[in-house]
Length: 114
Image (tube, rainbow, N blue to C red; front, side, top):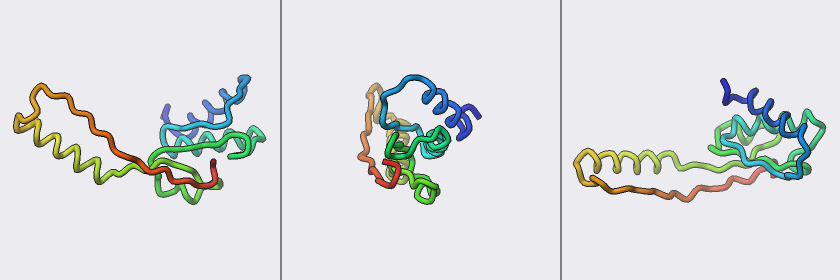
């Protein structure tokens, strides 16, 4: 897949070949972050000393990686409940013409990758 761990590793290797001054990277999800960590380490760099890595999703394996991954934890149950409520309101016609934005506080789970 174009969005798998191997693709992320390849993309990170490409970034590292360019002149860069970044010291950290925030990756779309934890699986892709693991690919980035592998590329950084394969390049002889250290996580987090040279480049810090943060993922997103707090997947179950994130805490047991070679470098335990700092990640943003989503509140999936709350998001699902809010989506269901919005859907039911739209079905009943109670939200016609309204634009709704929901903001949910997320939690940063700090581990060894930062």
